[in-house]
Length: 328
Image (cartoon, rainbow, N blue to C red; front, side):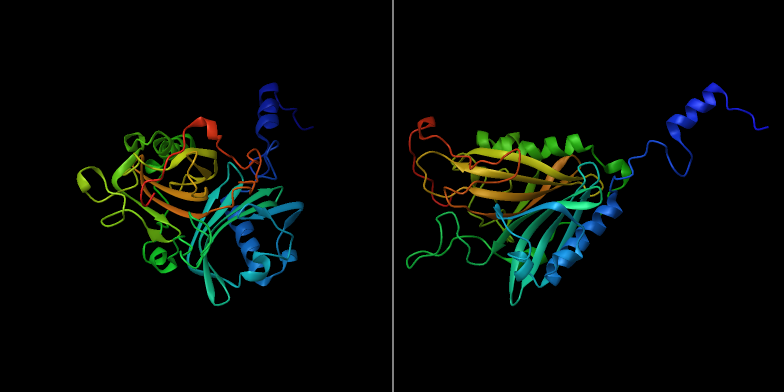
């Protein structure tokens, strides 16, 4: 007759299960390999123009620059290939994955951030932030007297890419620390005080592919030295960085995806930015920032994702109208 397990052994089996099949394992969790597979399946399905080629949830929801799109429309029709710069970031804790880089739309290119969420091995959400050549900029669409004004430089992005790396375990920070360092950037913008930002001197910022820091970037530091990601914030026209989200925190890469809305001061006619920013963090400080952003119309509800569904207006009573500083 087989011996009955002792009480302590039974409790151990109950809590831990066998070595191969833990009794209380979360069988639906998606690890890094699973998340990368799901992201690649989704991107491949988009390129094939075939939603059925991806494991989409029955209630799958997708936005492109904050507008909900039907399956088979939008990027499902326009995207024909991934471009020459591709980065993938994975977050098993949030069960989300992100792609940052270039996609091809026939003979044209776009710079994109793509966020997907996985639940029970199904893709439940996809969020695209897309920058294209000639898109509306701070002052709206192009007219007979002004260009569109948006930055767009995929060649520069490919020449100055985010790192593709796996950090040694000893060099990794907790997700809480990574998010706090990232959030210091937005706090520095809203207080107009670059000293609040936890960043390396010379930290680089790339907007829609264009490097906007360094010599000649137009936002000089103190004493006229070349700018970095902490420079020139005194007259910065952003009053509020609203709807801050940190959906992808890749602890192995030391990279955080932040999505937010830049709301302008009252009386300023320049548009809001809706932005995705990828923060590369080294030695507990921001090293570089890579963005894909767009400039919505005033009435557009952005970012159009819970829990931040509204359009984040800034009441005119909050401050008197002011004129924007040149180049801000």
